[in-house]
Each structure stands twice: as C-alpha cells, then as structure tokens.
Image (cartoon, rainbow, N blue to C red; front, side, top):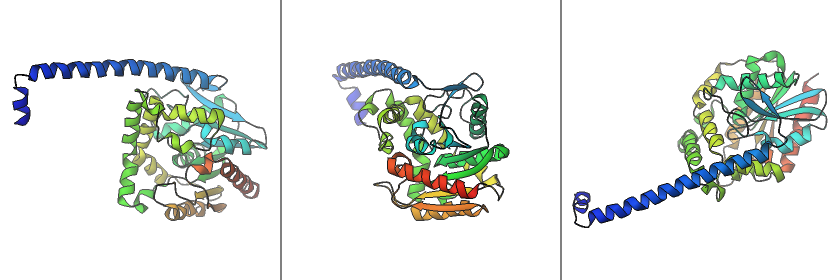
Length: 335
C-alpha cells in the first residue's frame, strides 16, 4: 500500500523521471566502464601472451609452459581458479634435472575456452592432445594441486601407459564434504556462485581495486604475480572456474569409479596449516590423503606443517620444499 500510494502522489512522475535519469546514467557508466575493462583485459592478455607458447588442439589453443631437460617428465595440474604461474616456484625447482610442463586449462589463464563448455572428461583429452602435439614424450609424473588431484586421477585412468607416478598436493577428495562441518560444506558448494558474481563484477573494473581471489597468490613475484592479478579479475577465467566447480559431483563421482593399479607410485602431501581466517581441516584431510597413498604399494604420505593450501605452492620456500619432497619420492619409488 505504501508503494502504491507513493506512486500515485502528484510528485511521483517527477521523482520517477529523476530515478529513470539516474538509472540511465548508471547504465551508461556501466557500459563505458565495461568497454574500458574489455580494452584493459585485451591489453593484459596481449602483454601476458608475449613469448608464451600455445598448442593447437583442434581449432583452439592451450597455453603450455615447459622448461628444463632430463630423464623425468613432470606435468603440473593446477587447482580451481589456477593457471601455469601457480607452479612458478615448484617448476623452477624441479626443472633443474627434469622436463617440467605446467599449463592453463580450457578457459583459464590464456587458453581458449571449449566451445561446447566444460566437460570433466575433456580435461585429460585436452592435456593429452597438447602434450602429443608439442612432442612432450611420456611417461609422465603427474602432480595435481587441490581440484587438480581429481584431474590427474582422470588422466591416469584414461592414459595409464603414459603415467609413471601420481603426486597429490593438498588434493581435493571425493569424501571431503562429508568430513567438513555442514556450513563449510555449503560454502564450498556455493563457491561457483561467488565466482560468477565476481565474473560479472569484473566488467566494472572494481576487482582491480580489491579482489579476494588474488589474495591466494601472495608469495608470487614479478610476471607470475602480474598474471595472478590479471586472471583473478578476468571475467572468462572466473566464469570458466565456476563451470568447473559446478560439476563437482560429477568430477568426484568419476574419481570414485576409477581404479588405480597398486603398483603405480603415489605421493600425497598435506598442507598442515589452515588458511588465515578459515577453519582448520588439516587433520581430516590428512586422513583422506593418507588413504590415497595407502591404495598404492609404493605410496607415501607427507605433512608439511607450516604450509597452508595456497602457500604450499606460492610461498617460495615452501614451493621449493615441496619440490624436494617430490624429487626424493621419485628417486626411491621409481626404478
């Protein structure tokens, strides 16, 4: 009733016209801001693409970042919202004695999105096509962080002859939501909605001023940090990340169904510290990670007490420590 009476007040048409002008002005500013942000995004991509290596996997490109030489081949799979630079410190430590490749999944970082949208099974086929097209010969040691742990399991299931070992770095697990408090599990499930909101917000340029996603990249430096800030505010990167996480149930169901040979070496590494301001799930996750290692006759489980889910990669000292654990494991577990 209040609304109706106000609308019919004699001054209402004037107020409505003023509101209309204001909304039109805001809309115009949003359009201008959106156009400016697209120019800014294109400029970022152009700068980050300079010197980058792209592989055509059938009409679209994936960015593949490979370095080093050696008898071993490591393939690094990032977690949700991740990209090649996530692995900067780890890759730099591993490539002294090995060939190491990180990359951007479809729609993330600088890689083209898949025209048909995200399909959990296509991550492995995309990566396999990129490695084959670029001449990166296996067998490979697959290293997956967080959501990437699911994805390397899928690659191993689809291409078992090309996998020499699996390394899980504070990996996601198909049972993790059941061991988390209900509110924390609900926050995990709602994270794709947050990413979609941030994707829409990115067109305004506001994420250039404050971005919660970029906070996880603290510890990176130089070009890697610049890439992290750019991707954390990139509408396509954020929307593609949401696409992935919305398929959580399907991704975890695939993991439940896949069996690994017991003679496939497995290293599981748990971050023993919680992210500041977040609940501590390290003990529960440690148990789940140990189970992954115990499924292998050549399994090992390690806890890095001072590392949290992000710093385990993006803090230089912790990333290099992680690489040492991986190298030591590979030397003893793979003949």
